[in-house]
Image (tube, rainbow, N blue to C red; front, top):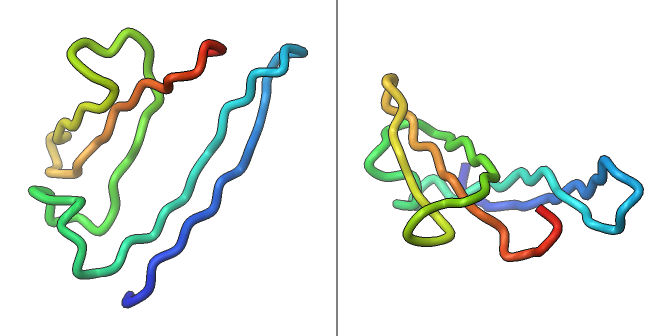
Length: 76
């Protein structure tokens, strides 16, 4: 794939105004963002109370990169 793309789906699960989102991002096939994984995809999980920053990356046993991120919003 030579191009990149992005789409965000907004959702909410309570009567409160806070929203979450599901995102799909397609990177150029020359990106190094997925490194050190050799997989063509990465799973991203929204978490809370992430220590030492708003993003963390881990590798699953199959070598797929997983991104953990904590949003800045107050409604999490």
